[in-house]
Image (tube, rainbow, N blue to C red):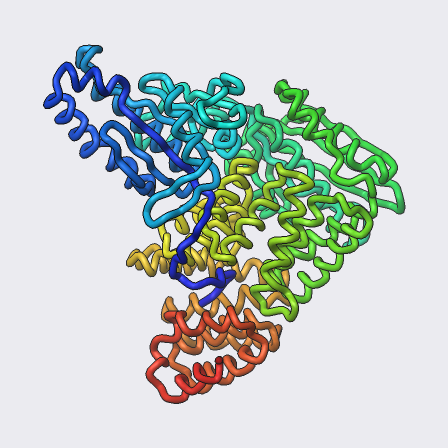
Length: 628
């Protein structure tokens, strides 16, 4: 079964250069300790390495590159892994040193950087390594020093506080480096599940989908876009905890009891509203409600010209922040006031494009692509429209649409990042493009950057999970997919992905439970959008795995009736037939799929375990020969 799979080989190719998170560590006063007692120092250091340091590095997926007498150089797949590992090591070392005379303690200094490295065999060199080593040199005993780049990538994702010590001149580094120190006094014990410091004691809020009051169903996209933009702006305020767009949109078109919403999302306040657009005028009603008792905290009506739409969104956001008595930092105020485009028509095309893209069918995404292109034509500096083009190219590439290449994803996401480096969706799309190009460490850095900017980004988690799964890293895949499923409780695809992961991990009951959950989500989506084939096609595979053969055959026929020529639908239906041992039906559908498949997607059928029961059959082998 393929849902939105990645399209590269599983093997890891040697790279001459890559982006890496680097941890450098050494022992404070090592020569002095050796002079006091060489045997005691070596014994103690060996014990610390064996019982703590090496285990923590392995736990956080680090690779020890080299070991010197008193030092380590370690490469990690992400800055989150590297900094978490460093903090846990230093926290545990404090415990291990308790009771040891100060002059005999073994303490580490640690520096962490992310940067370009040159790979030679198992060793790494270059500026990224050099900066990490110099940061280690200026770290306090028992402390951690980070580069500004690492701090930017982390965002608010860890339960750590940081001290900005400004730009530092480091030995043999040709530029000043912004340095942060980690404040370790409140580091939680390893393995505890604690909410990030930045999320504690914050006012929390859920913005429900604004109701379209225009009397025109085609204006639905506009009301959705206004809602999404208000959520995005509120998410820029560090003093607020904001529920993700995908989560609250499960209430779209439904009557929502505010107190029930508050309990479900564990929020203190809820925003409700409506949008009426008539010609070039727009009227927005908004109200802020206490989710505990249902009382209204604030309500207002705005009647403006459409050209004032961004100023209107800013005003609503700032009013909500004021009502919640949250301090708006200068940089947050600047970010909220930043106008994504000065051309209202470009914004209108962008909103139409996002609305169409979320339906995730080839015809809808092709229309979305046209909308994004029109937005870019009207405003060549519109970063979000370029990010939309990257998303559309990703989907169409997976669906074998003629003429779409990985370069289309890469180029559009690159342009979006150039125009707006703080655009999470652009970093997520860039990450999946890098993954397709087999530049996985760089892809991970982009995914981590996207999540640092927006920890509630569904697509960042979703793309990260698919890339990790394709590399065989099921642990990361499960972690990212589980978070994606929390962000969007109605997404069927992520649940079926989790079902596959659990099955490969031998967690059969969890796999079956997730299949059932995915089928329920697919049914809900299909009820709202009966013209969508993919939920039915993918759901059929899950039904087979649950032993519901008759129902699976019905879903296959239904999916083919909706979209008889859609490549992804054809492929998933073929997977279902193969799982049921239906050779004739499998080959009939695969032949239709083969005529539309590109060179990379043809590799799916060669390695997909869904076809294993048919591989020894001569007719299936003949089909594989015709793929070349």
